[in-house]
Image (cartoon, rainbow, N blue to C red):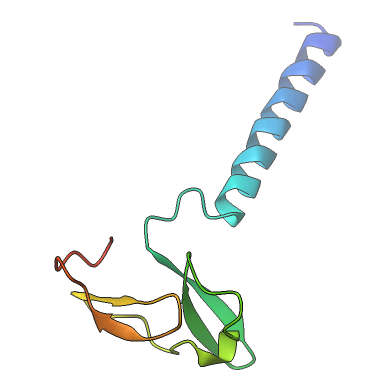
Length: 86
């Protein structure tokens, strides 16, 4: 292989790797209905559909248990159908 072909393959690999890193950081591979938001020395658990008018500090500092979900306003409530991933 010549140098130009090796350089092209390396650049393509680097772009694919960078794309995967960016997609992962944006949560594309996250199957949970909430995300963990670091806040000082603790974290808050926030649903993906949270109400933007509610401050992060109003959300729980523990993840919901199986059979529970976090509402857009920060309440932990029983999940209606019992599936914790919905």
